[in-house]
Image (tube, rainbow, N blue to C red; front, side, top):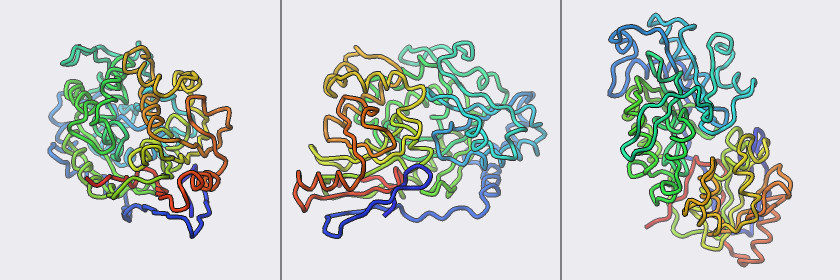
Length: 426
């Protein structure tokens, strides 16, 4: 069978004697004409005026800022942007008034070929694009504090625009509950200090900071509070299938349109399991989600949902970018030689406060529950020394685990990343 892995996938050979369960996503039919569907959605917004009405009600619209997902996300932004900019042009907004702000959060900036993928051939030379850089204080504006007295820093290209629009996609997220909506703002275009408070050790440690948990999630609540204060005029969000094709779209109010797609995801993504498995095989869903080891922690968190205490997670991600360009503190910590328990405790006690601590915090938590083997392009000396284990092939690790757990050990395979998530039956 084939697992999503890089651009081409990874074939693995399964033995008929193995006790295997495979979860495939529910078939979701892609839109035949996605640009037309997106334009229809823009003109039938949820809990919002239409774009045309919003523009008409403003004193003037000289500058438009559209926030788009960065290169680590599989959303076909070029389709959303083409539809959205066509609508703006029809409303009298010229292309030279529009700026695309790439919501990098703490990720690296975009490469040339990645910008081509994000914007598409029709827009790459028409629209100005800027990468958000969370540590660039000159590109930030201070907007006061949150209700718990932490400073709010937001990219000035967005805040100073007369018309503020968010785009993105909605899928379960391993500590934010769901991607999309408010997440394009916080952490997408927030300053480093604001982002780190949102991703604080306390918030990440919350039992509600998990896949698919929404309104109770402290990161969501913090992001919503700031988004309301900063302001969002309109959003266009989509859902995609395992082939990264658009299957749903919602536009309008940044909370209600997002929630509409969250409800769609809740009906399509989760699959109940009766009991945890000895072995869980999972990845991020292929390129671009599996570009690096930093991002691969998401797949390990999927495995955490279904694996037994003391079980094994096999993380299958290409990691063509290695550990992660720009994730220096993450790299430093996975080579720290500290035990996962020590790292986890130090983060909770605030002895470690660095960018990317949340990824290490989650990784350490999972390593405290299960063994994690990494199948990727990384070499054995590149995966750190805090507990991750190197593997050449999935089959090698399964055979090794069967000796440990017995020939009837239960194996769950999730070939398509977060397109299907296991949920332990209560």
